[in-house]
Image 1 (cartoon, rainbow, N blue to C red):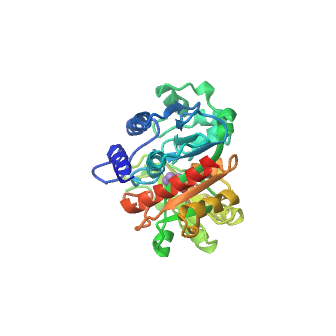
Image 2: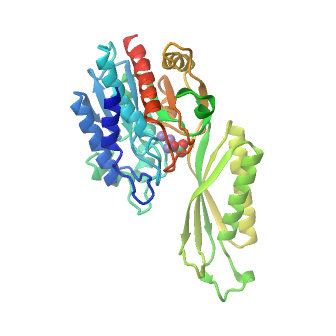
Image 3: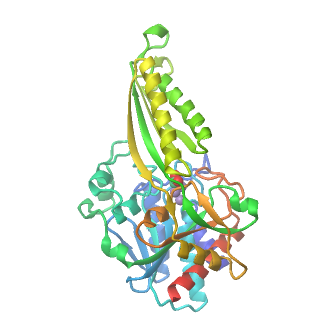
Length: 405
Ligand code: GLV
Ligand code: MN
Ligand code: MN
Ligand code: MN
């Protein structure tokens, strides 16, 4: 098992790594993502797995004939800007390494087993997270996906075409979904719960509802040294009020709110900006708290915009409802992942995953691997090789149980 994990990891880890920051920049259909997808295809083929690209650009590696009732694992290879090494890749490498392990155990699964790689999970390039799994399950209309653009104005459909795929065929794939009997995603934990309990592996119980909103503030560009304060229509001021309110509202509602991406035009030190475009990421334990936070940010932005002669427009870019993973599958995998020494801990997470999207359509569960720093979406994300192996052993136990049943 050792060698499979390390060999796989060593092949993937250099791809898309930024030397200056130590973080990953793997954006869907870009050069590093393309290299990572090619790496997956060749690693899967080297194992005798049959590799397919589905209509939406997700990759599937099949052990056994693709067919009904398949047990599917996998995750994603794309990253946030300067993301960590494990968010996504651990579940992909883990899926291949788990198959190696099961073969070594001599397992001949009765049900087909597959490893999937979902495209644009982070939404770092086109804005909507879990785009590949949303398209697959019909959770987003293909027309809407086609029109999404990246920072350079390249559309999703153009990028797909560039990768040799036909955007006309994009959309819900009921035949492929119909093959999935169960989906189990292995993932790095994106917090410190397991580090605190001292467990190398846990299972997910639920994903918080969350979403992304875009706020466009439009004011008037002018000279920083000559325009009197009273004459200004500065969009930076309502933007700042919105950020402050996001923090206050999140504190009051036990929620999370983040403004991590901003574009300022024309972006000059000595000019009042004409426009500020900002993205709000909000997450909460329940839909009511999430709504309350977003409403408060919206109200603060509008109030301050009116005070400063600025126009503000808010857009909902994506939402993900509360997900409770299939209870039977969750308990079964928690038990199995414990390797006979009792069930592993159950964790609720505020992070989104393709598993959360698939959970609306097929029985779905997740396993988490301990992250000693608790850091994620940043280069400091961490896991020991021993814990990665523990996660892969747990995944192999779970796949064996499900595929043989
Ligand atoms: C994706 O990782 C997200 O939760 O933002
Ligand atoms: Mn992520
Ligand atoms: Mn992830
Ligand atoms: Mn995610």
